[in-house]
Length: 172
Image (cartoon, rainbow, N blue to C red):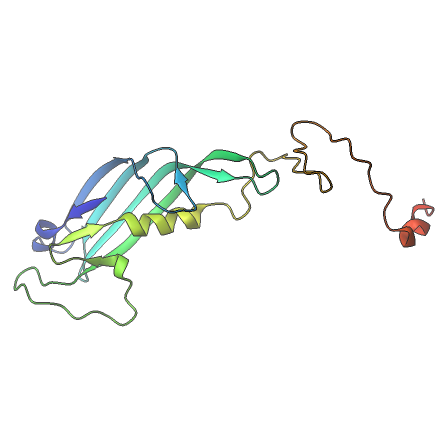
């Protein structure tokens, strides 16, 4: 996911490039495995500060259900919108000063290349559900034996509960 923006930076502010992506990405993150190519359209716009990259993208990732611990694949749609800043002046070739606290992932390198991989990784992680579920009505695991309750009921005896609360059962 690398784009050479040298020519775009030489053009007037507001100049645009459009690209359609369909990229297989391996080893994006050790916690997230992509099961489908990243697809979508992006637009690069020359701004006064650098290059604004924006687009709506789609992929599928393999996750682990937070209830039953089974792996499943789910679609992820995410918005990419980030401004990249040059490190080298396009006309003079002089090094440009870095801004305080600037993220290295949003820098245009010395060969005027934008690498979208880290920014996309961050956006995909932010688009993931905080508690992924394989299906909305996932029954989870038995708390006593660990049986996956989606596959059927377990044979554990249900606990009677705390005897101190037994008085409340009689108040019907």
